[in-house]
Length: 91
Image 1 (cartoon, rainbow, N blue to C red):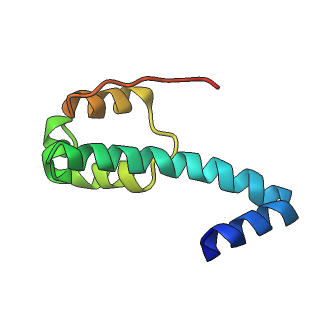
Image 2 (cartoon, rainbow, N blue to C red):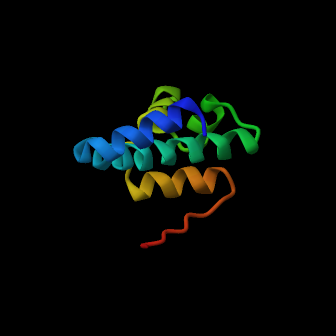
């Protein structure tokens, strides 16, 4: 286990508020990471993806880096532009 993982694990055990906030933040961050990796796998730049979904490069950057409260309709546009589809699971 890395030092960072050890620190996070220890902090989660000691601070419930941190643990709850960490998980929520991680899931929001993860959406952006998944979208960035899908864009890269499709061989597109942020600018090219922006053109496909009729927005600006800065909007694509914001989605990838700060995907907080992203609309389902936006996710569907991005997925379609990447030749993908959205699958939602409630666990």
